[in-house]
Length: 310
Image (cartoon, rainbow, N blue to C red; front, side, top):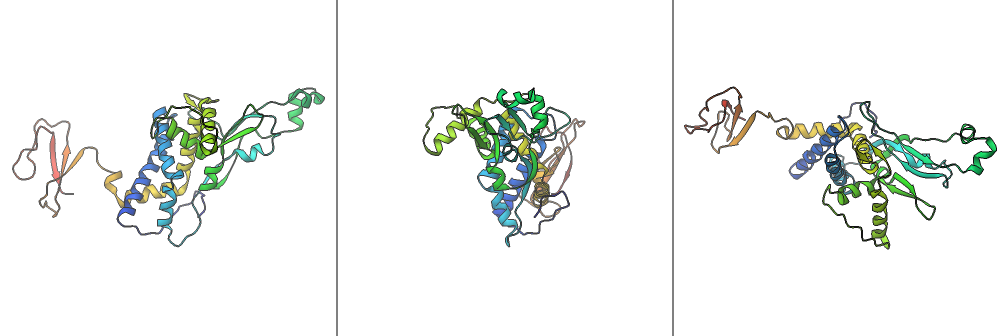
């Protein structure tokens, strides 16, 4: 299944707990879409988005749903995103100091679609008379090219790269940034500890966390890692399969997505007009007196003016 923006239809049949998974994933995707359709999200919204991305992408919830919805296999869901690795591949490694993948774009707030900070040694540009003349003769990309990724390849691609004291360029994946915000910054639980263990995978994670702690970039009120989370949420929400999953989830459980905020639906346990055990109470802010509920009992001091069956 390609990730262009044509209309997408996913034929499938789910039952029981699988429907619940569809509804949960659909709700999560709806949330990611909501925070990318406004001003820059708050720090709290970013932390919550990181926890959603962790469940969907690094813990395999999205992959599990794909298998349920595509039992015969087929093309994987994909994401169109910036590839900062491709940009870095053409830069001399000793010149790059810092790079970010970015990707969230809006006419309403500051944004970037990839960013490179590099230092060209004087010995390199001096024969050209100036650094600008050298760059004109040897143009190098400063942003990331957008391309299609599988979900796994996207998670393993670079989100941030920074030159460390030993002179190497340390690359940190998108998956690592998600886990950093979700785990270290309180998206799932707050863990401010920095007792570094340099050995094995834990040592790698601790080193990445220290580098991400510095932020090294600010977009509005967001740190560099937080903006990467917003960018990932934006790119997920732009995919056609995400909007289709949200639509299907709304069809499977409309009460979870389209409930009327003026209504209370109450399980009373005896048949209503259509034979169900539900009664609907509708609020009217102009009402002065409560009305009677089902049977003869008084509903209470609620401005309820209408009752129908669910």
